Amino acid sequence: MPKTLNIGNIDRPIFVFGGVYGNLEALRAVKVLAEKQGFRPKDVICTGDIVAYCANPVECIDFVAEWGIHCIAGNVELNLRGEADDCGCNFNEGSRCDVLSRQWYPFVKNSVTEANKKYINQLPEFLQFKFYGKATTVVHGSFHNTSEFLFQSSADEIFDRNFEDSLSEIILAGHCGLPFERITDKGYWFNAGVIGMPANDGTARTWCGILGLTQKKPHFSFLEIHYDFEAASYAMLQAGLPKPYAKTLMSGLWDNCEILPQEETENQGVSLDLAVSVNQ
Image 1 (tube, rainbow, N blue to C red):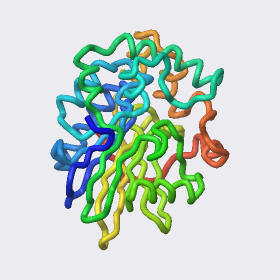
Image 2 (cartoon, helix red, strand yellow; image 1 turned 45 degrees about the horizontal axis):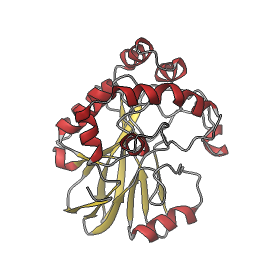
Image 3 (cartoon, helix red, strand yellow; image 1 turned 30 degrees about the vertical axis):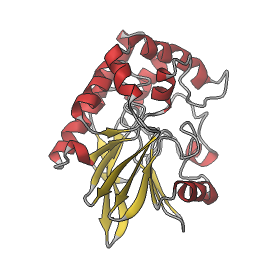
């Protein structure tokens, strides 16, 4: 599989999600939502990290593979296929996130099957296509670094370098865990958030979205996902995975804000107001 896969021209809305993180309950809810909205598998894109913190890595990889959607490799997938001993999440060594990753990453690495690995090995790192004629790239963290954390508060010039170097007007991203959009003079950056963990806003819901066109301009509609987070949290505890992350599924609050800039840290526990609620 080439590092970048071009999937041609798309002149219809696209359903976008990412950060499944091994959360099978959330993934099932997302598929139901996509199908209710009328999206075919070829109109669905996952921005990577099918596996990470939660209890069902094998089932989630099988589910995505069988669904037949477009998907890129996140940093966890890249490190799994490289037989790395860490998740590649770009955590500072010795930080709380780094310490906890030493519990969940070995669980994922020791769980994945040969069929899982075969699927992971064929995932591209980037997707590119024309969306109603506009050059579009799908990245995990950024075009320059799959593990790079970019946020709403990141500087314009960082986003602009991504647009320029990828030759794109639209970029769809994941990795940072928070849904947001940034529009600069160079282009449109849309991060659908993640479905496997809440967005640190004090609610258990998670996020995905739809890329469309409004008055000939790209537009992203954020959608809430409501799923059986209690079952997902219980499954984590039964699997012996980190209790703080199992608690996060219930509380909607991250265990720590180590990766966050000051602005996003100050917004911890502030309920996001982005979308139409979709109840499963």
